[in-house]
Image 1 (cartoon, rainbow, N blue to C red):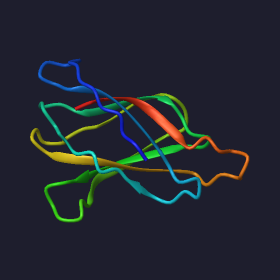
Image 2 (cartoon, helix red, strand yellow):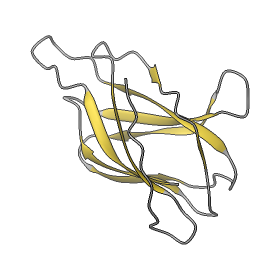
Image 3 (cartoon, rainbow, N blue to C red):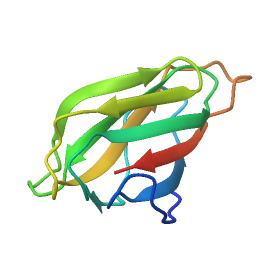
Image 4 (cartoon, rainbow, N blue to C red):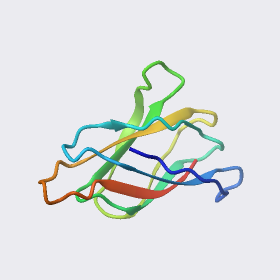
Length: 118
């Protein structure tokens, strides 16, 4: 498992970072450890450009609470594209968690990637 990091600015006072990781081909949840802080009053947006073999489902974990429970709804990508979580308060510490649909042994692409603006 990995999460790529980098920095830039896409929205006033927002951070934009390249992210990605590996998922379990069984469809089991992966909890990524890299913590970020929402830096502006606006949505957290992820633009996925690298899909695993099946769908990609990502959620946000609240890292200010022990155990990092998920808050809000998971978002599912069936193809490349952009989705957002709205209503996340500025200053919220979060990490990602994700899963993909279970695959057969010959469908080994379990990597995903994209850009997050937070």
